[in-house]
Image 1 (cartoon, chains in turn orange, red):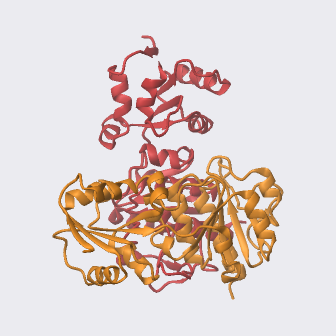
Image 2 (tube, chains in turn orange, blue):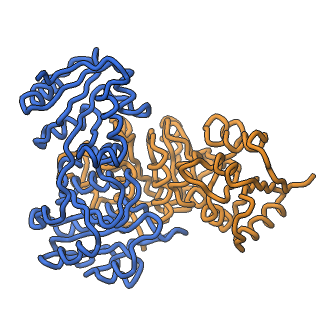
Image 3 (cartoon, rainbow over the protein chains, first blue to last red):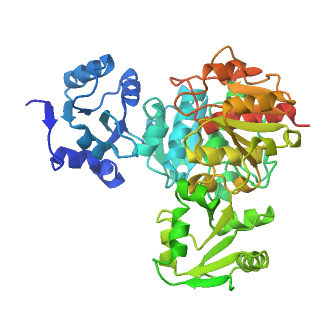
Length: 268
Length: 268
């Protein structure tokens, strides 16, 4: 079986499969997701993660990284597909034409796979709906040396093209879990861990608050914030100054301001 | 002349005008922008800003705020348009159907209109391309009590629907300027002001850095960061810890982490 093919038509089943990965139901069915652009693929490779399928435009410029990636993918039993730029553009979307993309196996996002002792900071998002915010939180987690991101209740799909793109590669470095609240809380309480909410209710100033590792920093839904009972189950509720008319920050921004404060408190 | 009209057809010129405001060239030609949703319109009204045209769905639920807004708009010489939900949905976009929208006059964004003494913190963004990031920076500016946002070089349009939405009303509370670098720097140096860059070059830790009011916090383009000569023209270059693989944060996140640090340093 040859694992290197050139796709010449828009109607090729492989094109349909790749395009399908832009939709959640097809991602779930295939257990795969799409990451676009050489930089993301290079990040993944450095983290030891290779695509199952490497997709490249014919006639692209040679690039040593791409050559190495291609060899690695074939060596690992993966597939390499070449196609004309206009076909590839249909796969990667007109807003973001890329000369290379990769199809990766979705990761295990079971909460029990997380090793909480591996980091001092963990980010937790509840019902986060915007994939850009989700990807940005992964990126921030990478920056503060967090262990990963735990998604509570109905969040955006972390394997969506938008979330993967906004993560700037952190999808490959951060641990990722998806859980319901009533599964998360018992898991958290079964070991060490301080649960901290960004909150306006009965909260203390976020600056100088007694953060303790492993510290789980939780932000809520973009419109509604956290449910009150979730906040009340936290060990610590902290609030950021709000000097203007608004009473909240963008969720990814709130998470980042908290994460950098916790990092300053917990970093040796 | 009656200033209250019901629009019954998709082909009505008013519908075409409103839809056109989703595109920058039509916004510039009309000197107007679109803000969608009752919450944004209520925010604007509280800031003393009324739409020139108030657009509402027929058959919407009565709302005291909307009734008051309608009266204010008519009293101020504005126009009220009612239309069926399906026509309004065509105006506000299928991703974000809203029962009410407003058409506002674009503000003066000349640098010389800014009063730098009115706030201790100002946000500055250079070549920021993502309207969501831009709106998020306005929102963060409101939260930290900043005076406003200064857009340097070719940034996303702050009057785009996406930026206005992400600002969560801060488009109406924050001052806004658009400027080229070679106009901004002389303006800055013509008065008091410390220019601070989020930077990796010759930078000191952002935490505990000697911020001084009025403090202008500058972040760069999402892909390229700030040009080196822009960074070198700054009075202070600060850097955030980067514990992971990536060497940068999302631009709006970087601005927010810096802004909260400056707020802690400068707030009385």
